[in-house]
Figure 1: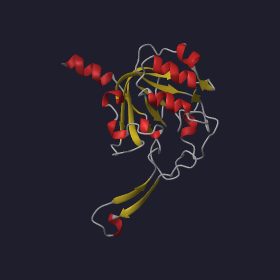
Figure 2: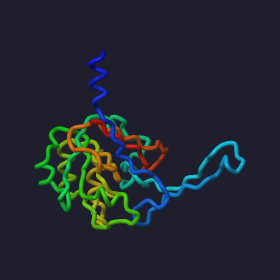
Figure 3: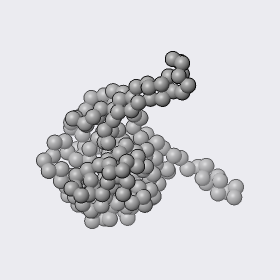
Figure 4: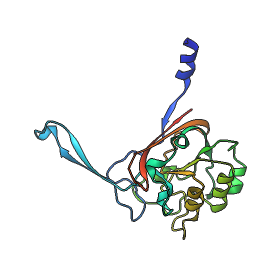
Length: 217
């Protein structure tokens, strides 16, 4: 038992979630995140309680099929075993986009959950939106589907090129049942095999939801 505890103690858990705060970056046109006091103990109320206002794709969030497909599964219907389990964090920094060639040359192996660490990381914490972010291409998305990937995450607010007509990358992934996680904060997380825990808010009928994402190495 002591040896088992030592092994568990050596494992490290990283929080890959972008903190939610007023003024945080959002995708252009989406509702902005806002929090304000509703009840305050320093003003005589019995409890502190805040009012939240945000979009379903604020901060670190999950895209279910309903985000881009008519009649697609909503957030609460996603299979939990897609959201939790072993995966890999791929360091693909230095690339302008992530295509089939990049993925073929990376250590994806047989992993069914993958997080893409790109040069986007520093921009995720800026207050203004960065249009020229690194994205996944259509042939890259098809490659992930062919490999049987069930979840893919990236470190900016969209996995798709900005203003890409038809949103084909989203459609390729979501039609194949691949869960998309966007806005994942991977700056301080080392690459390699890991366990991924992605827990979106359970919003009935939701076309997306903010999520807490943890990575255990």
